[in-house]
Each structure stands twice: as C-alpha cells, then as structure tokens.
Image (cartoon, rainbow, N blue to C red; front, side, top):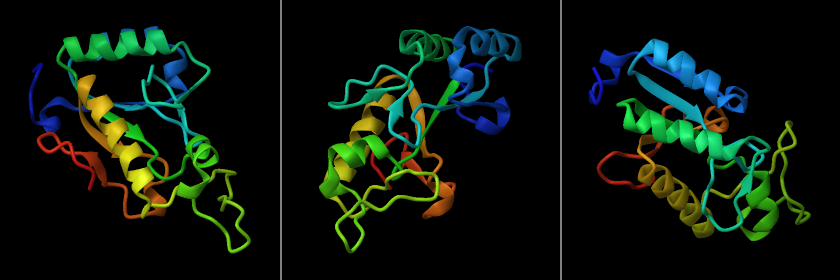
Length: 171
C-alpha cells in the first residue's frame, strides 16, 4: 500500500543508471508494478550524477537529468519508497577536483582501482562533508534511505546506509 513504512510489504525494483537513460520506460513499468520500494542508482563510480544536483562542482551524467528529476518527483508523489544508491568513496570526478581528499600512492599520485576509478579518503573531513551534502540533498527530494553503491563490496559492507530516516547522519 502507498506510503507503507515496511519495505517487505511493498516488494521492490532496482533501477540502474543504464535504465535511467529512458526514464519514461521506467515510469511505465513502475505504474504497472504499483507502489513498491524503488532503489535508484543516482551516481556513477566516476562521479557523474544522474539527477540535477545542486552540489558545487557536481558533474552531470550524459542523460536527460530533467526527465530523471521528473521521475523522482512522480515516484515521491505516488507513494513509492525511495532508496538512492550512490558510490561513496569511488568517485573520480571529486577525487580529481579535490586531490587532497583522495587516496594517494607513496609517489603522491592518486590511487586508482582496476576499473580506472580514483578513490576518496574515508578519513577526510572534506569527503565526509561531501557525502553528507549528497545525503541531505537526496533526503530533500523524498529519498528515505541512501545506500552505498558500487564501492560497498570493497569496503565496510553492502548494507552500509549513508542516510538514516530520522538522523540524516552518515554512518
């Protein structure tokens, strides 16, 4: 039922960044599904946002972000339980723009994983401020949870949640 706080009662749908290239098809499929939990991948590991972010320096993906924004608004207005998935520490764009907040090699160069992604330093205050900005922005758009994305399996665990419904704090 719309607005339910029990995700298990709703079922769920996972919407990838690839699927967000056609937000109208996503909306049509969800209209047939009915109210449920929807987990949307909203940022790539390279740091590109798939919605219109107001965070300074945010790089947008090459999708129709206005259409994705419209989809998010529609989902929020129609009782879907919104969960955002964002890579927290694997973020090339932020690392290149804020090299002091990235993980360095002993040579001083930035550390890159096997996928060609630069990683952020989880001990950096700048990184924590950035992640809190993302969580607050998504909360203001109707997201009830913000989950670590693609980098979760490489760090503390796939169930890490960046936003808790009541506290809006990073954990």
